[in-house]
Image 1 (tube, rainbow, N blue to C red):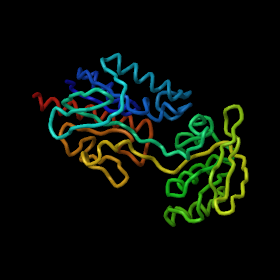
Image 2: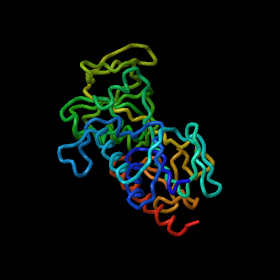
Image 3: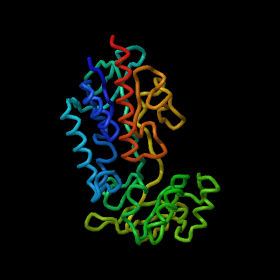
Image 4: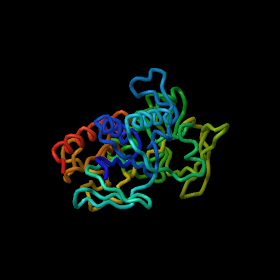
Length: 306
């Protein structure tokens, strides 16, 4: 029996663990399918407060993990496979283990959708990115590509045009899912070139860094290659909430919905990080919401001592 179980070991989950552990709640963190969250796939983080020279993403996560362990957090490897939220204590199934907890913090995160190319994942942080706000600054004065056709792709292309010498907006169709206002804004930007219809067949890399992309026209099968130093994949995120479907309130895209702050409609269940945030998706906002969830859980347990 645990006072608090935290699902997820990214920024939100580890910050929640630090706060819960310092409140003498001896929390358990279940790592999840992507231990360390999206920061574990990031190289240089320059926008997390307190690190004027930046810090490597995996190092930042490891420091948070050590800090949580120092105050008494227990860690278990495993992926959430089932959960019973119908009564307290809640039952959590991860791997071959079943845990009981008086309070639950869900910080399972969201996974960026990738194109699915062989070297794509290994090039994340070396030219491939899923976050313009995080990595745009690294491509000052260089040509880059953005893959996607929705509002987020248009928004990222516009944002990246502040830094890049040119932005190639690559989409598999001539039509876009994006709203007209976002498309018009991108078309009016002199730095953005629409490349349609085109799919990325290959990311061209040399010495572990992106140098270009090989594109294929899906209508004619004609192939071309363009030089880019960065490729931003903006085809959406999937919150890691499939196991929770029908058990907690979520929006049409699967993001969990808070009743107030980190509180859900089920007393004793709290949510934090990208699992409930489809707008900001930053390390600092995830950490802040993890803090909120831990404080809310502590207050809840003070009033429910049974």
